[in-house]
Image 1 (tube, rainbow, N blue to C red):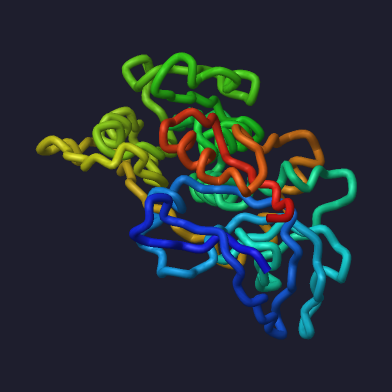
Image 2: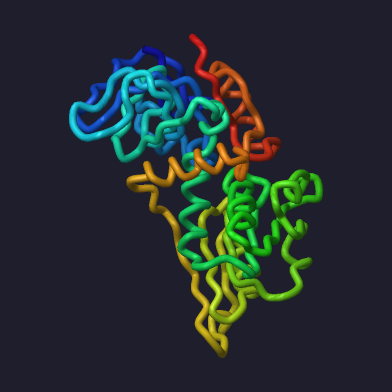
Length: 304
């Protein structure tokens, strides 16, 4: 079968080649991948992947072989999946990492959701009840940001979407943002929850906007810059403020199913900013690196 694998030290950092078909364990399903998505972290660190490793984590396709043990999708079911080795014609996924996609949901749309959807959903869930709270989302024009805006609004929050330029704020109000601001200087009143995908100086500035008892989730570091907190900036009277990390994408099946259901209800739109054949991955990566993609890259796995 054909797959996109890591090629550290080369100009692109990846190559398309023939690889053996994956072996399917008793608690796994074999999926014919129809669509796959690209996450920024995957391409930012291409040189860190072992040579020859099949890349990617987000996929949607059709089950070719059901699991030998445990309940799960049947042969022919369309599924959304999350796990290593997604950028290939065939991939195996654990049963707790797949969700069946109903016939009335576009398979290509939900393919863009796993990584960004799990990140936004689980982070907001850990923030506590959202109704009436002020939620600030930085880097809101990206994949995580666009999903988080929708989920926070769906949860009843007042949503402030922060972007790097006015043009990158296009469409965020339609997704549910109550305010769209460029940078953080336009944020007036304190906020209760922050989802920060930028890091660096913006992480520090976001910390200063937290209300007593507020929580800041550091879920990305797109700036690539260090965050330097001024002396005593982590001290404040009143209820404690919290800085939290995120990285838990384990056993995502139930949350993948929830994301699919939200799409079916019309409450969530996948953040697809670029779509094309996987033969054009190089151009898609260049567009991502140059910040020309609002949201996610979606690859269609036609024959190579």
